[in-house]
Image 1 (cartoon, protein in one colour):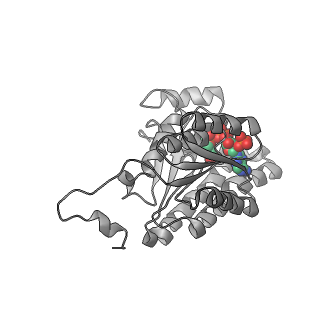
Image 2 (cartoon, rainbow, N blue to C red):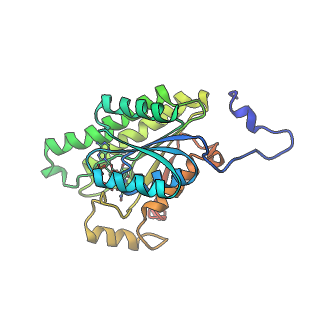
Image 3 (cartoon, rainbow, N blue to C red):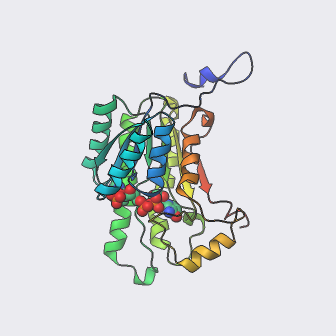
Length: 264
Ligand SMILES: NC(=O)c1ccc[n+]([C@@H]2O[C@H](COP(=O)([O-])OP(=O)(O)OC[C@H]3O[C@@H](n4cnc5c(N)ncnc54)[C@H](OP(=O)(O)O)[C@@H]3O)[C@@H](O)[C@H]2O)c1
């Protein structure tokens, strides 16, 4: 048992839990839009100070900050490309300069390009692996070196790594790399009570949804909960994962799909 987990072993029964993120500092990569934005807003609502990261979209990052601040939350926006190690280092520098520390790192930044392997270009392959695989490595490496003891890390993959199908090969391949790094990192950081998990969404309504309307319709028909996911559905799962109530979860891959894969 490490010194952090000792606090949860109580002589009087039940564990003590907290449900707020007060005084926690969170970096959320790719949080100007989509799932990352919903997570940034949710963590700020739960009391965290949040670094909102984006790469190009100034308007979207302004909107995100405005919504968080209007709700009484605290956030800064920092431009940076996760596929560049210097940019990732700067995200942590800026979070520490503004808020003093980093307790939570959510790597939601991602890029998705759909296409058959037969027709896929090397340039598209490189772009996707740069952001999704190498970018994930840079974010996880920086987090491993800088996150506070007791910290929480969540990376984003896709349910497509389990059953992607036609047109998703290179994308699913680029996301699978992160899943393996999360498993290793969970073991490497457990001694510091740092939990590391993956969330793998299914069809989720965002700009990043790359499947054709026909494929999405078919997937919704196969989904027990009978609809496509919303960014808020995923944000609530992340909010749980970074909370003390999830203190016994690390190295896991949570498939957030409305049950799409249940009948496999
Ligand atoms: N939506 C789905 O159905 C689905 C399914 C499975 C997995 N996922 C995964 O879930 C995560 C979020 O997806 P999403 O659909 O919410 O994405 P999205 O709507 O396309 O938004 C992408 C976000 O990532 C940022 N971003 C893109 N490239 C970046 C880079 N190199 N460095 C830093 N930020 C970058 C974008 O910033 P700008 O606004 O500046 O462009 C934006 O904030 C991704 O990892 C994705 O692969 C999504």
